[in-house]
Image 1 (cartoon, each protein chain N blue to C red):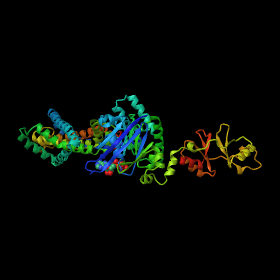
Image 2: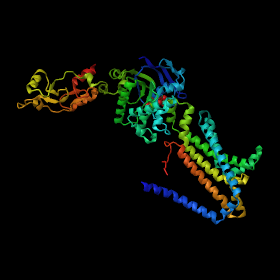
Image 3: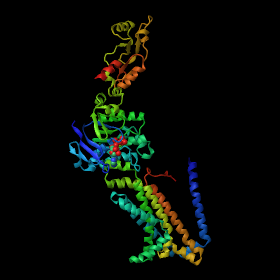
Image 4: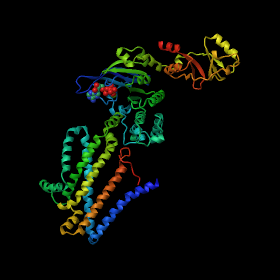
Length: 254
Length: 369
Ligand SMILES: Nc1ncnc2c1ncn2[C@@H]1O[C@H](COP(=O)(O)OP(=O)(O)OP(=O)(O)O)[C@@H](O)[C@H]1O
Ligand SMILES: [Mg+2]
């Protein structure tokens, strides 16, 4: 029994350890470490910008996505929901870079600046909201009609049913949407630099321009680590927030 | 005990379903504490009729009165909270533990926590699931039959005076179903709820109901006690529905106690054989029932087994399986009589004290009424 736990632990830790080893080696080999130390204030500024981009667009996407997705499941919205769904699906199929370019081109038309953090945030948000809307809608829609009928028949109000039954049961599906959204945001955030949105993309693209692998790696490695960090946090919070009764995978204790 | 539930010419026409009446001018009254089983072929409107009572389905015309109040005037949410509801497909909440599922209505009714915990514990015991083992499990970790029992427990949690149950034991195997039915009837003895119990199984309807409501194509064919339906089926449809063996089915309605004869020929096992011979001479029977000092059954004596060498009753008593407890059904009684060769059955109480005996003739008498 204990042997198995050890084995599990080793199985999980060894790849993690190897990845970290590889990244550190890469980091050191190309002189990214020296570059970062020399430019530490700029490094922190970029990190803060990057986190701002990711977190703000993420939070907005979750709030708006879940709200919109939920509203679409209400009886009165039945007709609008299929239209919204189509828009959302089309929107999600546009490549990230194109979304940024579109934001850059479109925002000036409605009197906003196409350059800076705001358009970057808007682009990230718009792109990430799609999977959340879609999953919230289909997650709630998939809650068994029998369950809803039982709840209604027992005298729960619409609001109680939404918060105590529908949303908790749809949570695994919603969480799937949030994960996709995070992957999109974390993956697109470095591109924000292209429309002046700041963030770690600055070093990556500067490195590419100067053909200086060190600077590029100094930007790319933190981006990769941030992606891993978010993935880890999401997985953790899923286990915490999603009821064991609707979790599909057994909870691991390690 | 007054009328608890009254349906008055209740009719349902589903929108878009032409003018087909899913339920057609259905009227009946239920006394407080009665179970009314609703039976009929699939699609006859059982579920529809039931769901109009808690207003999951709107009434097209007619009235439903609960405890003197027209339900269309009541607040829907409050009405539903006062009616326990078991749906045909169970519908437990997957995100909640078994304990939370059962506690949902008490929580909505804002009971205090200690009272809720106690209620959950008691209900789990009633449906025969160990509270410590099941309270913290999730629905997906239970078998279909166990889930169905939780569905029943959940519906009873808020102490509703009325319960609506749509095929509550449908997913349970025959042995467990029989057990649950008995448990349910035992609990019902104590709690005396007014219950609408939908089933498609006529045997279940007969067993569970004080009244049977037999529907066909949305209209009421017969509303009567099980006994009445079995003895006087209103028409061929009812007779067909209850089956050609309806007389045998009536056996389920009576206990052995009802049919047995008192004062069976008993003899103390320590008596001498002369006393036994005297008794044989007096009564017209080949057998005597041997008892001990307490009147507890010890066996049967066969007149033809007595030889000259025998001096005491004790020496010829043969132990017997031909006995049943007085509250068993006549059906079991009849079956038991045919299993043994004596042509009768010793009827005993819980402590195996002899109360009487039962012959096939007694059963015939009882069925004649
Ligand atoms: N929502 C609905 N819209 C239109 N017709 C319906 C609807 N629900 C039920 N019906 C029809 O009403 C009739 C009665 O249905 P109901 O569900 O009450 O039958 P039931 O007696 O419960 O059958 P079962 O034993 O199969 O559960 C059926 O003919 C059915 O097709
Ligand atoms: Mg039905």
